[in-house]
Length: 196
Image (cartoon, rainbow, N blue to C red; front, top):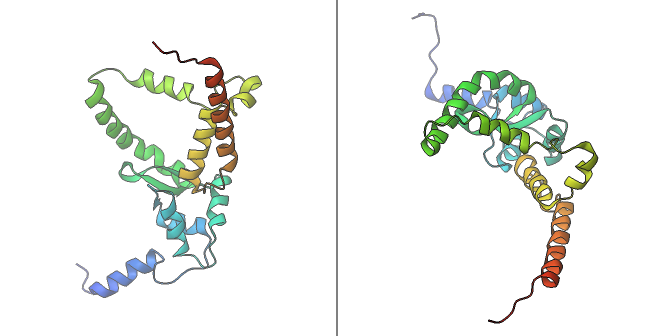
């Protein structure tokens, strides 16, 4: 042990940790810089990153983080401990290859409990192809974007990933209501219930 080294008291260590986390005083730094310095923020639920950045950055507005999502400068993705974190895209691309073996092993453990020793990779591949937004031919993509499942998925993605409010996804809600009314009218016209 170096005899000239300074030993920090508990309080000094606590203060140093809080300062490094930008929790002693709000900073003038950009949100992306804070996210990168923290090497990710817990984001299992969409709202905590907004609060977490607000507590660290002066003059932070909700739209600042939404703009980072929209410009793809940050992502909400599975990362450390197999939980969802908010990371800069640069950090995500750097961390993900190193985390992939741990994440794959965790997913495999869960899947193996359910399907035994079956080879699940073909199912993963088929799922990635089937659920891709670009799977439909370009000619019919405008139509597929109006289908109820697409509207629902887009709305849920905006709410869960970008922290959107119901007002922000009002067009998808209107689309789903139109489909509901259409389905109800169709059902009334086509289905006849007869007494036995």
